[in-house]
Structure formats: structure tokens, C-alpha cells
Image (tube, rainbow, N blue to C red; front, side, top):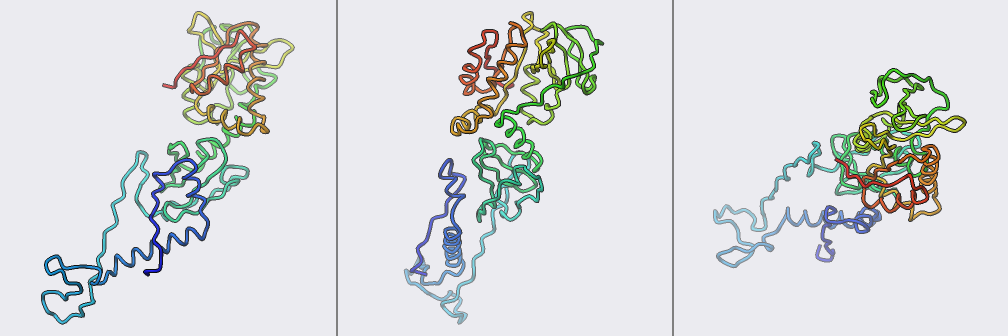
Length: 346
């Protein structure tokens, strides 16, 4: 054992950035070497010989016990240390339990996150998924109880929620955004202008006329609302007060153009667009990958469509993250009627 070089265990909880990435990407040989060093250390601690212990009063080594029982002086009883009790993290995730309890999910999602990314083995913490995607999907670590820890430290329940986040992120990065409103709808006028209906009061492909913010505007159900993350839905509701709805402008002879909302409570009657949490990371990611132009093309295209449809009416783009404000300010610069407001999430 003396010829085996010991290696100090690395606490991955103290690593971040490239250091954490390198730790997860260790080769099989490096992992086996660490396992062997750990095994030897446990062996020596478990079967420590008397030559490794010294009597505190006599200074002699290898002394038999005081009872004189005749037991071999080289014998020592094994010492067993009880494992630490697991602790709980908010959300019910247990920390400190054997990593084998957090298994790789058995997910069959063709074209989804788990279909395109394979887990990297980790003997200490269990497998983890590492990707080149923006946060929070740069690192996805399965936890016990069906939970997943994402790269930004948040915990989500179930593989389906990871897939929902992945689908939303892919839509944003590709420039697809939310689904466009249908070309034709049935128009109704059941509520007075300035009253925001509930989403369940409208049928699919039905429009409730409301000229409060635009003479050709009206409320329609938003088919993409339920597909977004909860924090994105909360932010859009905070800005528009119309969860599950879009305010769609239908000018004659033009494609319909959707806005996230209409400020019926504000005397200015401005049109509204909500850019919730998550855009800052996608903006940074798109700058590192200039050949992937979907997101970079979509934002200017959306600004152009909204400015044209608004016919000079004020449109406010509310941005949740201060880091994303310069990007969207630059996108809106050619259109005086569109402006950015940095509005923190509540």
C-alpha cells in the first residue's frame, strides 16, 4: 500500500464553471484511480494495525490489551463509523444519501432533452447531463424522489418539466417563439371594451373585440401560454393581467399580429410585450454561436411586425432581466413607438 499515491477527494459542491465541467468529464481511468485510492483509504482506516497506533501513556506500539487475555497482539477490532443522516433541501430532495438512489430517468421523448443528451457517470453524486445549451439546461442532475437540479440551482419535479423547459428554450433559440394567431377567427363582442375576459370564456379561434388599445384589436386565447415555464407565465400575467390570452391586432389585408396584452387600466392604453426570465442567457449563448441565427433574426422581425401593426401606437416591451435590456433596446431602436421597460419579476 505504501507505493500507492493517495488522492485527495474533491467536493464537487465547491466547484463551478470549467472546474465543475472537467470534474464531470473525467475519463474512466481517472475515475477508477480515484475509486482505488478511496478504497485503500477505507481499508487502512477499517483494518488499522497496532503499529499505526501508539499508547498514550507508555509510548509503546503494538501492546496487547490490559486484560491479558492472550489475544494476538496484532489483532484489533474493526471500527465502524455510522453514515451521516440525510438532510432535506426545500422541495423534499434528500442530500447525503447514497447516489445510487438517484437513477437515470427512463424517458422516451423523441427529439427531447433526454433523447439528445446522455448522462455522464459520476461515482460520487450519480449521473449528470452536461450540454452546451444555455442555463438552466447546461447541467441537469437527477436527484432522489424524481427531482432534477438544473444548472442555475433550481429544482424541478419530474422529467416532464425538464422537457417543458427544453421545448420552450428550443422555441426561443430557433426564433419560432409562440404560435402565430390563426388567419381566421369567429368574432364576438360580449364584453364592453376595457374588460379583460378570462381565457376559459373564449373558444379556440374565437376573438373578443376590444378597441381599447387599437381599433382593430381583440382578445384571443394564447395556445403557447401553458407550454412555458411557470416563472414565464407568472411574469406575463404580472405585465398583462391577462393569463392565457393575447391581444391580437387584425388590420385589413395584413397578417394578424399578436401582442402579449393591452394596458386597459392605463390612460395611455399602450400595447404590451413581456420578455420574462431566461432571455439573458439565450442572448449570451447566441453571441457565442453567431452561425445559429434563429433568435437573432426573430426579435427584429417581431419588432418590425408590431411597429407596423400598431400604426404609431405606443408598445412597451417589459424585460425582466437587466442584462437583457441593452439587447432589446438595440432591437427596438429603429421604431420610435416601441420602447423597453426594465420591470423586475415580483
